[in-house]
Length: 89
Image (cartoon, rainbow, N blue to C red; front, side):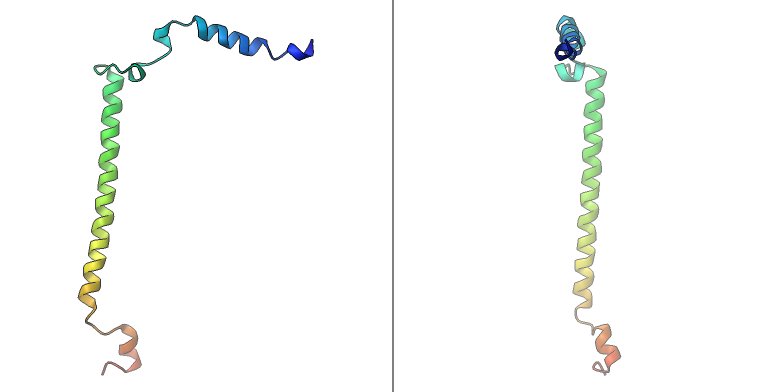
């Protein structure tokens, strides 16, 4: 009798899932209703997150461009070590 002790839990779960109406199994986003408020909210959230990712990428790009420009501007100057070692005089 102990062997079958686990059976009622999965059996009840399968029975409840099988008898549930199809409308209760999926939300408007899953079924693809474009006019539903949930679908519009998810779409707005995705666009917002894409905008945030784009802004972060623009920030990284501008950082690297600023570093590149500064290195080009300073490449003609003598280095700090050369000035303090007396080589630059």
